[in-house]
Each structure stands twice: as structure tokens, then as C-alpha cells.
Amino acid sequence: MHFDVLIAGGGLAGLAAALEALDRDLNVCLVERGPREELGGLARKSFGGVTMIDTPLQRRSGIRDNPETALEDWYSYAEFDDDAQWPKAWAEVYCQHSVTDIYEWLTQRNVRFMPLVNWPERGLDRLGNRLPRWHITWGTGQRLVGCLVDALDRHPKKVHLTCLYSHKVTGFLFEGDRVLGIQGEHDGTPFEKSAQHVVVASGGICGGDLSLVRKHWEPSWGEPPKNLLNGSHKFADGLLHQSVAELGGQLTHLQKQWHYAAGVHHPRPKLQAHGLSLVPPRSALWCDATGKRFGPRPLVAYTDTRHLVKTICQSPAQYSWLVMNWRIAAKELAVSGTEYMTAFTDQDRILLLKNLIFGNHELVKRLTDECEDFVVANDLEALAGGMNDKSLDGFRVDSKALTQSVTNYDRAIARGRKYVTDEQLMRIDAFRRYRGDRIRTCNWQPINHPKAKPLIAIRCFILARKSLGGMQTDLHSRVLDRDGTPIQGLYAVGEAAGFGGGGIHGKRALEGTFLGACVLTGRRAIRAICGGLS
Image (cartoon, rainbow, N blue to C red; front, side, top):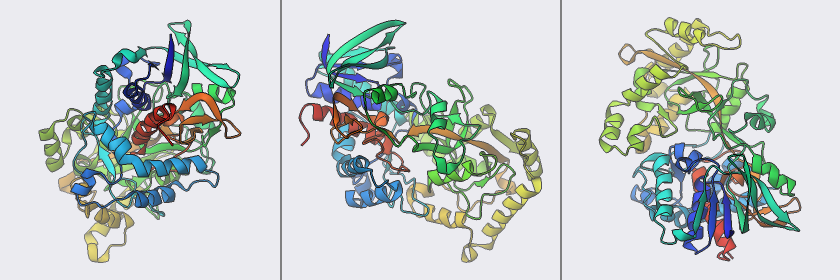
């Protein structure tokens, strides 16, 4: 059977492209490597946060945002290379069209967002998000994907959709200067499908094969960590990147990757080195493998994730400890994903309100009970002993260094705001001026406080998450060859395209721009195919 459009990959970008194709009356085939229940890829397991600019929710909260300000922040944070023509162009498109092409399109498909907009990645030495832009899906990524799958199932033109599950695409059918379809295997049997246009939505190179992450590691970070956790998708193995390169397609910025600094081992791993990405408490002390607080500039979450990762990678042990007490953990600790954030995932308003007011004690207890990287103790000496039971590669926590780190921090709190010099405390004050952060951030909580115990230490590893580079694409999502000429019939969207242009984020992301870029690029590819883009 010959199709108008064939989409290789059923992640968020692939689903967006399939819906857009049905809306435009195209005959479309969606080829997914996994079973139907895994449609949505990594987005299904995500927290569901989407960055958007000048939305009704922002305006309702008194946030006066605009595309020009957002683009300035994006350029500042990205630190684009001089030759980043297409990534810059895609960043401008994102900022200009996030409301119409992402927000309105998603809400029309029953996706709902939390009324309070969040504010991560505020920046450290350079501008990040100057305003809150991170919209959390009510129901997390599970609900986000579920709404789009439901829209496909209920689409009035569903008769034009063919879905192939558990079909692995391994390459392309190519004749002359044009891609004519795909080839692959299903249950060990080869298959081929032809199409007028092929859209690659197969994800990135992080997760399916950590050797690729190591191969393309950012040189300025030093050697990749020996203990690297996997927080990506099992099919993000770069298979179609290689096939595109063999066709002459240009791959760019593969050394630019987005990892997290607070990864812990998944209690029920489904992948080799499977990890969970924690949302680290801002009131916790971030210490190195010896128990000494990172400094002189302390590490603080919600500022610059790339800086956190780089600093820890350049430390001798390449892993770290977060030190806190139960009160801090209950108020501030979260997991970037669906399975542990039950109030969000289950859309339970009463439970969410309870957690915000009294703290999420159930989450902390579950993690301390299930995760091997958590240590709980009633005093600092016992905490250091428990940390040493989990120390790696010959590194040991110095009980005196740990005690000094905590004591110095607690004394800084005791001196009061008139005499504050600790940068972490100053940043906590800045966070708490925004009401969205005030409800989730402690008000200068001492660590070694008798009424806030027990003490908790979390052994944290770098967790591989996303590729920021990929197949170079123009603003029509067409894959470009090494001379900058479009390869006829071939398009790339989502993480496969570096979320747009082969690297829309540059060096670092404003956060939430991953899911948004999947929707944006998936839709624009189909609109270009139909001649709907100028």
C-alpha cells in the first residue's frame, strides 16, 4: 500500500504529525517500534511540562510575557555557535508561535494545564527564564499523550490512518535523489513500505545505547562519568541517525546533550543503568563525594542545569550527595516523571492540596524505602556512616567535613537576613518571592534541626536524558544534506531533529521546550508537505 506520509516513530512528535496529517486529509502510516501501549515514547513518562509564551494562564497570573523577551532569554541561554543558522531560526519560530501552534492546539485536544505556571532554569551567570513559562500538564505526560492518542482514535478521518506496532524501521528506500519509503523488520521478518514523504520521529541517541552518549560527550566536561544512569528511552539508539548519515544527511551538535544532575537508581529497572530524575530540593546542601559542600559558589537547583552537570562531572568522583532533613524533602523533593507523582498523574486535587500544605510524606517514605541511593539517620555522624556504606570507587565521606558543611549553613541561617552572604539563601529568598515557588520552598530551613529530622542524604548520579543535536532541518522540517540541500521526500521532527534545525536549544534548554518542540516540528512538517508554509 502506498501512503502520502509515513511516520517512523510514535513518540509525541510522531503523534502530532499523524494528527496534523489526518486533519489535512492525508493517507498516513504511523510505524511504532514498540507495542500500542507505549505510544508517546519518553513523553508518556515525563512530568508533562511545556514552555509557552504569553499564554492565557500567564496573563491570568499577571505575567506579562512576549516572544521578543523569550527569544532574548533563549539566545542568552543557548550560547549558539556562529554557524547555528537553522537552530536560531527554529528558536524564533518557537517563541513566535508557541500559543497558536502548541498551546491552542493541545487545549483543543483536551490537554489541560495547572493554573500556576512554574519557573525553572532562571540562569546563573547568564539570563535564563526571566519569567515563569513552564506549564505543567494536569495529569503529567501520561495525560498529554493519552489525549493525543484519544484524538487519533476518535478522528473523523481515522480510516486514512494505518498503525503498525512492534515494527522496527532500520533504513530507507531510496532511488536517485529521493526517499521513497522505509524498510525494517517485524518479528524477524523484513518489511518495506512506500510513501510520497517520510517523516523521521525516532527520538535521539540518549538511552538506547549509552555508548553513543559517551562517544559524543561534551569535551569541556571532561571524561564521561563511570557511573552514568539512563533516564531516556530504550529505542533512542541513533539507528536512523546512522541511516540518514548514509544517505548524505547532515548530523549536527551531537555532543550537545541535556542531562540531569540528580539521578538515582530506579527501584524497578527496565533498562540497563535505569534511573529516576529527581527534582532536587533547593534547600538541600549539594556536597561532593567526601561530604564537603560544593563551593565557593554553592550548587542550587532551578538555576542552570548544565552548570550543575558540568561541576559534578569535573569533580574527582563524578557523583554527589544531596543532604537535607525530612521536612525539606517532604516540601521540596519531587520526581520528574509520572509514576511517583501520583497526585498529578491521577489528577487528584485533594491529594495535591494536601501535599502542598503538609508536605508529600508518602513520596519521601516511598523513595527512602525503595531506592538504594537514600540514607536516613538521626545525627550527622550516623548519616556519614550510612553514606560511606554507599560510597563508590574508593571515595569516603569525611564525617568532620560533612558536619562542618551543615554547621556553616545552619549558622548562616541563624545570623538572619540582615547579614546574609550565603548565595544559596539569597537565591531561596528570590525563589520565594514568586508564589508558585513559595508554596514549594522552605523558608530558610536549618538542616540539623531537631524538629525537622530524620536527616536524609541522597547519592546522586548524572542521568542521561535527551540529545540536543540531531538531523539538520530547515523550517519545513526537511532533512538537509551536507551541502545544505534538502533530501527529497525526507523530513525529521522532535528529538531526531535536535528538536528543530539539528539543535534548537544550543548548549542548554529553558526546560519544557522539549515537549513543545515535538508538537511544533511534527505539525510544521505536515504543513510543509501540504504546502501550508510560506
